[in-house]
Image 1 (cartoon, rainbow, N blue to C red):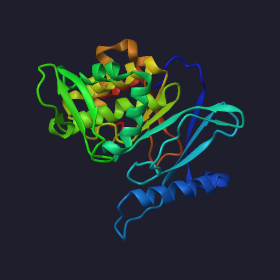
Image 2: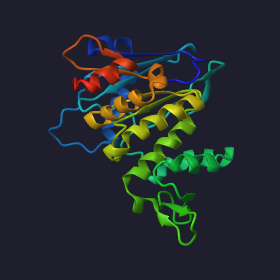
Image 3: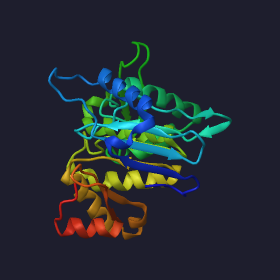
Image 4: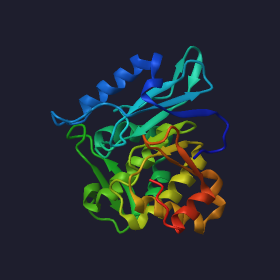
Amino acid sequence: MSGDGKGTLKVKILLLEEVGEEADDWDRGVKRWRKRRPLDPDEDITPVFGLSIETAVPESRTLLPVMEDGTIGIGYDYPRSIRNGHSVTPIQFLTLDAFDPTPMGGLWDMVLKEGLEAEIVSDMRLLEPDLDSIIFLTSAGPGSGILLGFRNGGRRFPISTYGDGMKKLLALRLSFVGAENGTLLIDEIDAGLHWTVMEEIWKFVIEVASRLNVQVFATTHSDDCIQGLGSLLRNCPDLEEQVSLQKVTRLLSKAVCLQGDQISIAVAQDIEVR
C-alpha cells in the first residue's frame, strides 16, 4: 500500500540461492535476530527467504532474512539519514516486541517535537472513543510505562489496563510517524488485536498510509485478518486500488499476487490465500 507514489520502491522475495553478494548484510540481520529472539537449543534458525528492499537512491538496497515462522530477521529501524549526499528513504519495522514502552519512547519524542499529540490521540480513538491524552512516564527510568487519560478526567491508568489492542494500535500509529514518506514493514499485523476490529484496523492503516505517503508491507498467518481485509474492500471498493495481497510459499518459485477486487472475491468464496 502506498500514498501519492512520489517515490519508487522495489521489493522482491529472493530464494536462498539468490542472496549472493548481499551475504554480509544478510549475516548481520541473522545475528541481530538471534540476539533479540529467545531460542530453543534445537530450534532451526535458518532463513527461508530473503526480502530485498531497494529505492531509487543509489546504494540504498537492504536485504533482510525471513524466518520459517514469517518473522523478519531484524530488531532495529532505519532512521531518516543521508548517504552519499542523498536522502535515504525512512524504513520502520514493527516487530512483535515493539509493544514495550522503550522502543515506542523514541518515536513519541518525535511526536512531541512535531506537535502531533492531538493527531495521535484522535487516531487512537478508533478503539477508545473517549481517549483524551497519552502520557509516557520517564521519572522511573526507560520502559516505566504509558498512561492513558480520558475525557471524564480523573486518574490516568496504564495502557496495559485496556488490553493488547491499545498497545498494538499505539505502536502501529507511532511507527507511521517514523516512516513518513517511506516504508513500514509490519510483522504479524493482527497480533494483539481482536478479530472483530480487523476491518477497522485495515481501514485505519490504509488511510494513515495515504495521509503520510507510506508504503506498507504487512505479514499475517490469520484467516480472520484476511477476512477483515476482504470485508473492508467489499464495503469500500474505492480502496481496492491501494491494496494487494502476496501469497508466499516455498512450494512456488514466485509469489501469487491478488489485487484488491480479487481479494474480496477470494474471501467471499472462501479460497485459501494465506
